[in-house]
Image: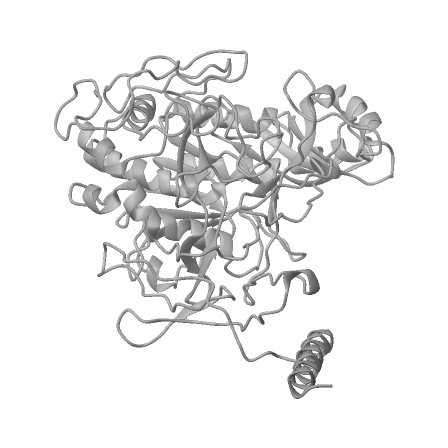
Length: 568
């Protein structure tokens, strides 16, 4: 063997042994010194409000340091090991728990007349003949969101309208006659009716009990106690580029804030617990109501939603001077927070009775007769209702309350103006707003990067507050049309099922609203909205929204429900 051949053999042996050592290190969990940067910091146009992010971020929990405008991050080293030999690293927030919060989707063959999912083979019913089906929704890039299984309602529970003249003892006796326990009941001025929450105690089938209970002369109506889920998502591995606060430029909020900040406008946030002590939310929470009667602390979702609206320290919300009514309607100790028909009814009633002008609903569920009635009554009082479109993906049927015609439904976009893959589609989508990798406050003075149509809806709620500060007498339908006509068109020309009328443009919308005039709202000059827009959105197969106009605050918004309670 020549000296050159011997050298080649030794080199090959060295490479082979090095490869084996690397593979052994990966198998035994030994750390590899090299780490890769996952995110880069962009240049933000609002230096007084925007934090500076460290260039290497894998874990997402961050906390603000004591120095001026300094943010420190928890960094995780990621080894350079071939992807085929190591599972993807999923970043986590150690101080919070997440739920994918995806509502079940189904194929057209298994939908009823309302577009809701019927029981499919092997889907597993839950007493009402309908059931949730496992659904997987994709996140950004090639990252798949974990499969979520959701029951449409709480087993063995009913929400029933009962005779308002019944005493508590008589309501309890009514429940016992039908093998039920009265969990709660109260009169709701919003809809002028008394509703109770009842639970089966004798193990009988839900449908049998429902029929017998509905036949009682003291019962006006009975329905399942439907389940509602917050519309955020588990964080995915960040792609190249730091997304912190990119929503400001997309919505043109710095320009809009030269004209309005949401002062003297009250937004009810029906959500999980909000950390009112967070520096970003200081002096912004004007009222608190716990519809659950729980003892839980602040939650990451509710705190983030409030931050998207009113953050005003190192971050910037869309309406930093607005007031928040913090309504806790979502809770749970097993992971993601959830709510029910009865609790949502209590929350809407409180918002309407305590001076809210805008209601943010970053949650989704099935079509619900009780909540539809409450929303119609809330809209009749002139409140602006805004909801997350849902995170169930392209195959999902319409989710509620977003699909209600009285509600402004908001889908989510990313930094490249592409639709969030998990976002719902449909002709009920009114607008789009940033909702992917959004930088927001989290409980205990911390921050989070999260995604979901929840946060898109919150940004639009803040933009609505800017418009109401600009003109307090703006009617809900005039406000909706202003947002639609000034939106920046995305996707195919005109209205579409992905972005509605386009991405909200706060500056164009505020500019379009006359500050001291009652003349009809016209499209703002210089807007990028295309002129070939489609017809106004309507509930699928039912009706279109009436043409709005400005009027005094005493006028009521047009509603289509037969039940129209008297305005305040």
